[in-house]
Image (cartoon, rainbow, N blue to C red; front, side, top):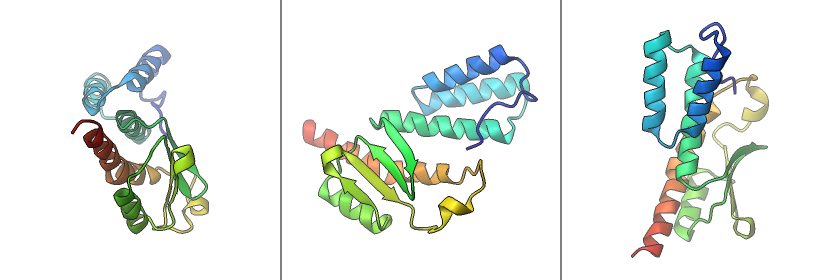
Amino acid sequence: ITAHIPTEYLPSERLRLDIYRRMADAQSQKDLDDIREEVIDRFGPLPQPALDLLEVAALRVLAKQLGLSEVVLQGKFLKLSPLQLPESLTLRLNRVYPGSLVKKATSQVMVARSAAPNWIGSGEVGDNSILPWAIEVLNTIVAPAKSAVQLKEHP
């Protein structure tokens, strides 16, 4: 994914590093929105690589909030861990993302991207089309799984 703050947009390395650090430390989407507003106010409209960087940061924030330590592309799968799915969400996973795998022993879920069978070899370097799909997966499968766990722990 081509996601960065271009030097043409913000020449100061110190300021770029500070913004990267603040994005990495963000705990919520509101934190990222505040950073976005500040940067636009100070330096003008964001170029596409900086917008993509904010999307990556949003994915990281969501993954952290859902308790995931791993959201990684592995072959034709999006690997999510640690994650245990109840039976109802395993059925949903296989209905919405056919070909997905649940590895209970290792607390991993491998989500297949079946909508585009040849997506690995067909994308260009820097292709960001996977980001919206990854966020969709987290909201469709992981968020309900985490809610189900919380309901079991706190009746």
